[in-house]
Length: 179
Image (cartoon, rainbow, N blue to C red; front, top):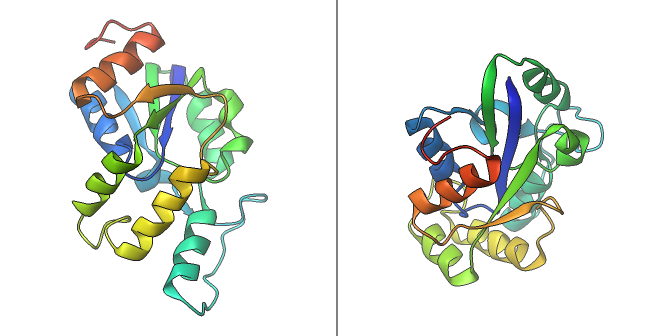
């Protein structure tokens, strides 16, 4: 996909989609991982999984989160195609360890818990994180950091969106606003 490939990760509500859309407005190629790649599968093998029956909605939400993955072979294929100068993959996956080493850099959007709660409270109920049971899981994951790749470049995602994007592009070596 790109001569240089970057992953933008973060907890639900950290701003991955907003950053992706801002990068697109600036003319960059973006892969919306949560929209175009993700499915429910086994994080170790990549095999698609059927939803089991759960005793509670909280158990169902937690299972879905733990099994939200990207097809590693497809990610590898997209990265191998070098037609674009720079590609940003934005979203979260629980199997990133199978392809994270292919990225030139990984950016992790960070927000404080109060910002996170405020952002989630503004989401519609049909978007992940918009319901109280989902919000509780996201706050728990924020505290533990268990879904995030280690060793990523921390980006303060509480800053205004354009400054967040500028910080990412600066770290990529691109002039802010241009490829």
